Each structure stands twice: as structure tokens, then as C-alpha cells.
Amino acid sequence: MSKASYILSLGLFSTLLFSCATVHDRLQTGTIVKDCTGTYLRVGENEDYLICNSEILEAKKEGEKVSVVYDYTKECKERDGKIMCMMYHENKGMIRVKSVK
Image (cartoon, rainbow, N blue to C red):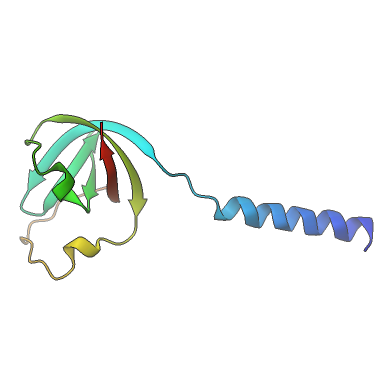
């Protein structure tokens, strides 16, 4: 294997390795927002994130501040088949809460 091929292979492997890495366990403090469309974590300037496993925050009240550890998700299986209201609630994405601090 030539030196150029070795360096190219090493670069390609490194790129693939780092592209597959994901960041987990984000900690965020925000405000609980509840409406007929679901439960959200509001952070910053009205940036809401839909909480897929909202039952973990069932005891928390609307407007309460919480710190949560979460992961982003692309699917909300907990909401599949459930009837939600026809209101639109803009959000920045979906999260799955791992723990409440």
C-alpha cells in the first residue's frame, strides 16, 4: 500500500468514525409548557422542544422551571395513534427526557 493510499484510507476511516459519533446526555434548564398538542420544554427565546415521554414530567406544573437530561429523537412512538387537538404548536424538534434534576 502506498503512502498516499494509506493516508487517504486513514482520513476516510477517521471521517466515518466521527460522523457516526453522537452527543448524548444534554442538560438543559427550561420552563414546562403544556397545551392540547403536548408537553414542551421552553428554553431561550421561546424555543420549544416537544417532549415525547411527557409522563416523566406529569407531576410538574405549567410554567415550572426544570432541569432535564435529554436526547434528541426523530420519532415519538409514545404519541402514535393518540388523538391530539388540531392546534399547531411550533417547535424546534423532539426530545426524550432521560432524567429530571
